[in-house]
Length: 396
Image 1 (cartoon, helix red, strand yellow):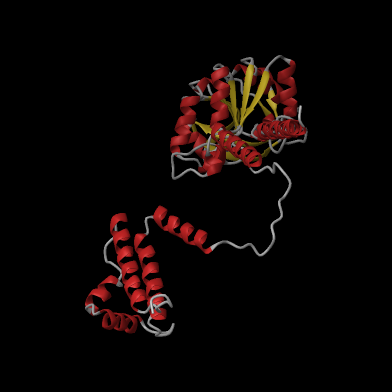
Image 2 (cartoon, rainbow, N blue to C red):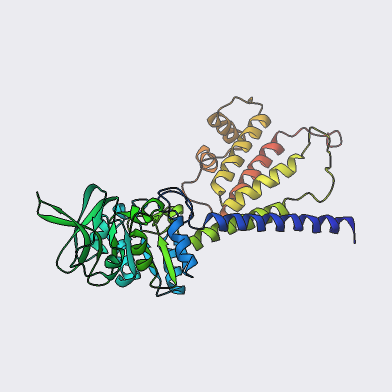
């Protein structure tokens, strides 16, 4: 094996390792977050949800995070009966288009939805039976009502540390209610709609700090433990295409962005391969000298390739006028009119014909017309050169 082949194999091995490392890093970067902020699945701070995650996994229930619509749809395709916890952590639903929310409602069956906190947009597009979300200030202790119709709430018995409630219509059932005498409304901390959706009015009921408050853990495990998989959906719609407006690169689906990144990686590898140096640097003496004929031929090919016959003809006309002025001994600063007038006088040709020959055409020339025109310029110069040529000794 030659040294060149060994070096090529080493280069390809390094490129493969770098490409694999980049692919792994990109794949990790595209995964949904689990451990940061409110109700983060691995977050052990008071606002995290590591406690309920551990409890569910101890009971054999898998908890899967999702942030984009693409990820959520992928998870539901694999686990169509999964319970979906919806927590608007980034307030993405508040600014989402109605088409997106309608698509979300069509994607998640109503009886599989569990809401951790309820916003106005969720009430409008994802919930039936909720009239409003209402702040409760801080309720230290709430006991379940005797007429509560939700088995999980009756099992829990009492809860505490509530800050939010939902006002329901007659089609939904609620428990742990707080009555407001001013509005004559009752806001419930826990509710279930007629189509089976479950509502935790205060998202902190599912947090680490709220889970140990009286019967909250019973509510959480009862509500989330109905299936063998829980999808923890905290939407961040920047990774999904929207139907409103044009798409920016960050709004493209995950597979498109991954494809673009791989295209950049492969292109970089190809450029590196094509731009590699295969031998020592060859030094040339400076300054580099290029024959005038090569420059002229190269310029002519450039004009021909660009189909700029008019520019090429203008260059030939200017050069011809300069040579005629030199042959007629008029000086380099002579005007074009003076050169043409003297040429017409010496050759006995009408000045109008010469002016037409040295005027730029108003139409695009074909290749044949360009060649014919340049031949006329050359013939004219030949006539002037023959007239002013100096006789040799042999001819005298």
